[in-house]
Image (cartoon, rainbow, N blue to C red):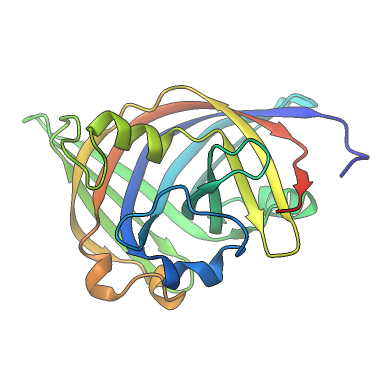
Length: 243
């Protein structure tokens, strides 16, 4: 990757769903390189999040006239970045609806699988909204979330809602990889201002088949957040680090 000159990828993300779960550390550890500490531990548990969103106006500085749109789903946890010693996102599994972008990111050693997914949002007259994600990724999935548009309240184990939102949405480093080495990239992004949500229905087989959550746990997240928009700028190519 040293042969690839530096460039930026910018995008707007819309209709973001964050579904977070407190799960035992020992259950998650096989999916995360053992030398990387988790960024949060609470009674021998740590957090994973399912994050789904639409990416629009995606463009790379090396090809400024080309623009892409796609939807994306991530299963991620929160770790300490080996380079900065600050919280970072470790991506356990990711899917994307663009076959072309999946191929390009594969060349950059970022493993985004090609999946089928659509996201829709319904704004209701009473100020509430309904967010639906459905598609095929390791089997058919369907997520139905409603929101009253109000900011989140207490989210265990964080001291304040603001602390929780910053932890879940604020990291500016992303990591992929296994025990030998990690693929690392840096991100600049606008502040994410989410509202609280409630799961009405969820059928999402990937995290269950990975052994991260049970079916019952999947229906009872630690928190549900919905965010209308964020602006992201990703520094490419990624670098390789050794934990």
